[in-house]
Image 1 (cartoon, helix red, strand yellow):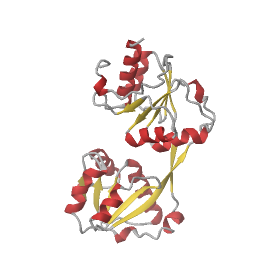
Image 2 (cartoon, rainbow, N blue to C red):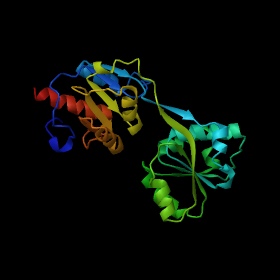
Image 3 (cartoon, one colour):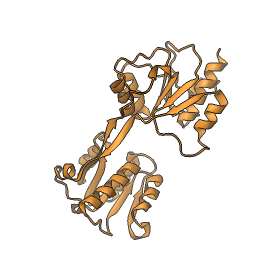
Image 4 (cartoon, rainbow, N blue to C red):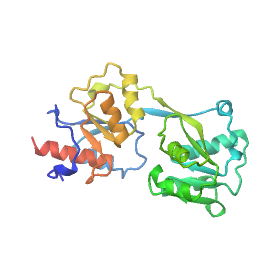
Length: 266
């Protein structure tokens, strides 16, 4: 794998020469012993620590009412994450809103649609599923153009859905039901890590929120997804690993390819 440079996205400027021994993953720890992170740690003799860099906080019923949104004015709901599913139904319960049986659901992926079963019985509802991204849902929105869509979302979100709906004259209401905030990380000795892996722009911003005097030096930075990678660059940090790669679709795979390349070139 390490001999296929066309499939790799590594920083070549000022690449650190020191070995990678400690890795900080900016997410909660895996819930299974079969996690690929455990295999990665064993293969390269790494110490891998986990710590969420961001927290999700629900809006209160009072805060939601200030948006002047009536859930029952809508005929379809768009879900782009499990967080949105959880927070929407929790909010509906607090507001004592009974979601009608004929409500339609548009889910970004099969995974999100399956998760929806925690709250509804799928055979009694109408669920439409995309392949993986919000762009995949666009053909479904056009096919169901007369629906009145509610989009439960975070205070930090892309504008692609709202822009598409506006361009196609489809009724859409964005409802902020949870907020993304930086976790308190000040107890971490951030300088001891040889690599930090990020999965969202908010996670990258949380680094400098907690450590405004952070100096990257020999710390490798890995980013998953183009928006996360751009957030690293926007903060003038060196991006050493950009995932996914054609030959490594996961963060663990991208880190493994990097380490294989690093050690084979020493």
